[in-house]
Length: 125
Image (cartoon, rainbow, N blue to C red; front, side, top):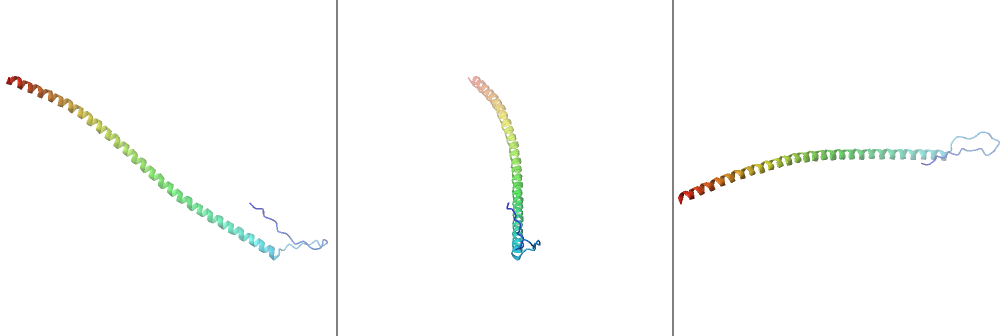
């Protein structure tokens, strides 16, 4: 940060005169006005930067909120898919057990048919 310099005050030309002229000259007034104008400009620019930053942060916050919602939705979808996979796995296991039982019954039917066929053959001879 820059240091502010104090404005020079007109000193009397003669040393014996003890009064000082504290009224600023036109040039000094312009310098002060220029400084004030520059400060006002700087403050205005800072204000604009703060507003722009605030708007950017608000947009970023909205994007983060949307991202969070998307992630939550995807999490729910993954959870739902997990439930579906569990149900599918359970159905496949039930189907395998049913097929195993059907194979046992089919084997019994085959054995019975073989006995019938053997009995019919023995009765015909």
